[in-house]
Image 1: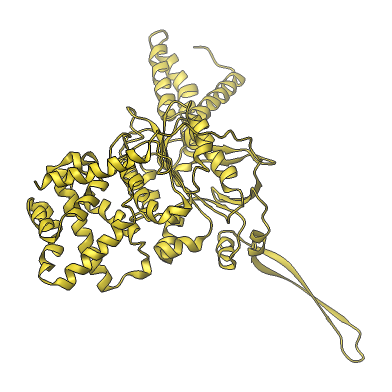
Image 2: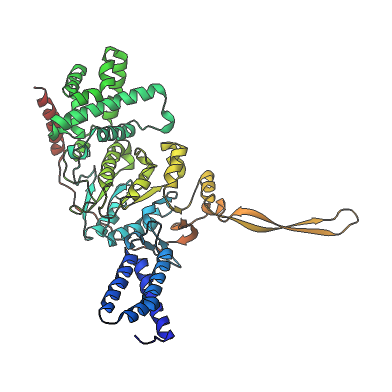
Length: 527
């Protein structure tokens, strides 16, 4: 190999550096690909030239190129040694420069008052990205089809199945306590807790020793009944059958039913042991009766009576998007079952090596999920992006308590702050932004016979974004804190196609017949 001109070496190093940059920035395992390519090239050249030539080539080409590859990898690679995958990088169209979120797996929170444009600005842009990259996911649509009618035209031809779970009208049926979703006792305890806490509308401030005892006893009773149905009557392991079982059977019958299985007996031990105290037993039973009363409706029984939709939605065999529709007029009865469905879905999604997916919780403080402050961080490990939407931080504080609410929001790295109405929330926004130094100037005039004026100049530290600006934000206007930087953006108003499929044709007689059928099936157990 003859001497290589210096300009040829520089050109080769530059080209190699460019290829290395592209590989490390946009290709998973790009560093290893470049390294392997250099090794293969060296082996091939070694067969066609002498030892001296190959040694010179390694000194002048291979080693410098590998050094360049290492340097570029150090700058382009992320902390885990992987480039951010393109499906997790979101580009949003705004007036002016585009808004780029580098890695939405870190979680997104959107806080803005009613009428500030959350749905048509942030949520619509995110859903467009999810559709483009074939994300699976679950949507909590609080406002009676407002998001679902945008999502259906978008996702129906996107490659994934699109399902709607609604209670009026009815589309698909779902069973969040099907035996296949409850592999062990812990899973039964968790689903019982979610259902009960939402039925009782538990707040963090409500906990005291007495209420905690009754809640634990009721939770154990629900868990025991679910376990017995799951183990011995799997076809009847649904929430409607659970309610019918409780309503059809007296105290002695319930205890006998629970004692039929050792595990269900131990789960409900607090209830069984307290049967000697009429007051205690009456307290537990009345608590559960009042709770179940909220969801003992024919439409809820119909929707929850069968497992038509698989809930492992990010599995490659069943990629799908599920929109679960709430209704502000009926949220006292719908939110508990919706929270239970979403809990089961997130548990099924939490498996490694599944498809990229999302959890979009509109009006998130209307449903209570256990350990919500851990969910965004946990789901991130499974390629799941959490989008947490609410009108005001105070709603979250009321549901989870101030500390837990703070922990939830601190686990969501991308913050969208829209128009605010509460001064405390505006102050909360203000603390996110860096402190800058503003120049100050004060003039003091002389008194008496002195006409001299003294000018004092100085600096004062103030937040970069003051609280008052959040009161003046327009519809579709947000201050975004993303990737360590803040920016004020105005979203373009998108042209949104809306539509819904035809619901399942059901008559009042069908609903009544199904309601009676479930009660009859429970009665058949005790014949």
